[in-house]
Length: 134
Image 1 (tube, helix red, strand yellow):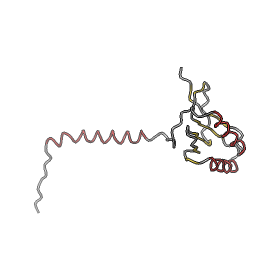
Image 2 (cartoon, helix red, strand yellow; image 1 turned 180 degrees about the vertical axis):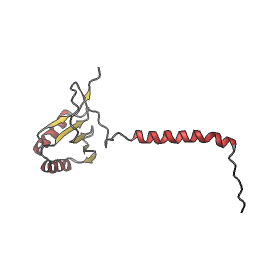
Image 3 (cartoon, rainbow, N blue to C red; image 1 turned 45 degrees about the vertical axis):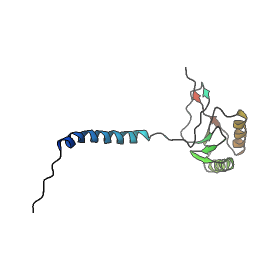
Image 4 (cartoon, rainbow, N blue to C red; image 1 turned 60 degrees about the vertical axis):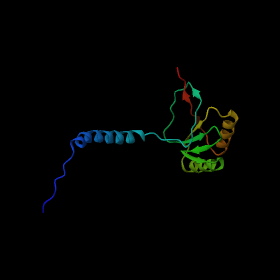
């Protein structure tokens, strides 16, 4: 049985290393670009001079400018948020709770939410802020 030899054109042979490099760069940036955790909506916290980064194993609450709430990356309404926090407080003794509120939101909205959280059993609440730029 006789098979025909397929010859690679010289112009095709010169472009193959370029294609390989482009695909390697594409794979690198796909892997490197997916390392950060995204939040369900955009929040711009206020600035603060304190440098405490906070704990790692905590309940993180997001409060958006439009009043939208999220708990650990999942968008919830306020009743569901308080029920989930009560549930977590019952299963874990004193987990840390962090509140990341948008800096443009009215202060009384934050106060009302912190009062509701305290009524749900939260003893310690940390307000997350951005560091002040020098």
